[in-house]
Image (cartoon, rainbow, N blue to C red; front, side):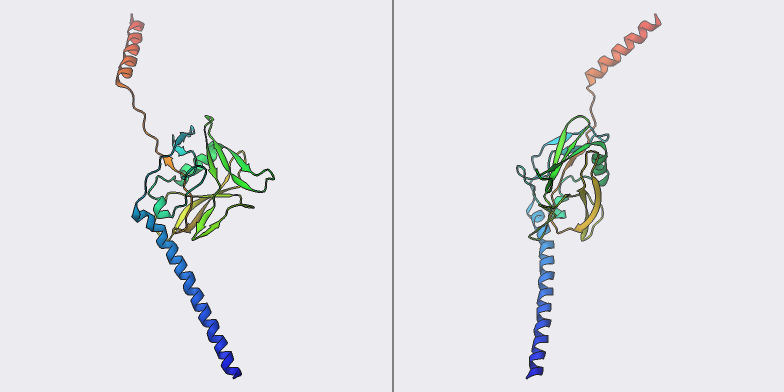
Length: 220
């Protein structure tokens, strides 16, 4: 009887491990599928405000993470890629050419986000909302000092590059490129490509006329 009970216990433990492994695998697969479901249903382009921070590239940035009011929405990479995501070069430019201010609780123990101020005085605010692994919210709340958001990826795969922004100081924050499972859901910060400025034809003709007059007067 003792051997029978022992064998039964071993069998039960093996089945429990098997079921646990199946549950983990199923959760992983569900997270991956959920990451692409919204894309299949279609995404409505947001009506979001962009601001020119006076950056050398002329890139305009969304004034906050995409979402209603002060909240951020979370996107799997397949969904996020439908929007104009920043490149790593654009993020580095943002970090290096702007002044940064950390937004913390009165005790200083909770990091709420960061204000990024351009040399022209205009600014954006990046709230720390963490990211989601399935239903679990990670890197958020008390003790967290990081901001995560997707960046543009040229390659394909299960893991995609994102930005981890942390240790925010007045000079600039620390940036780290991290690879996360593409089914995880992160906030997104958007960019707007710099549009070449068009010169008004009549204004250009007027300028040419004035320059011509000056040149002619110099010859007489």
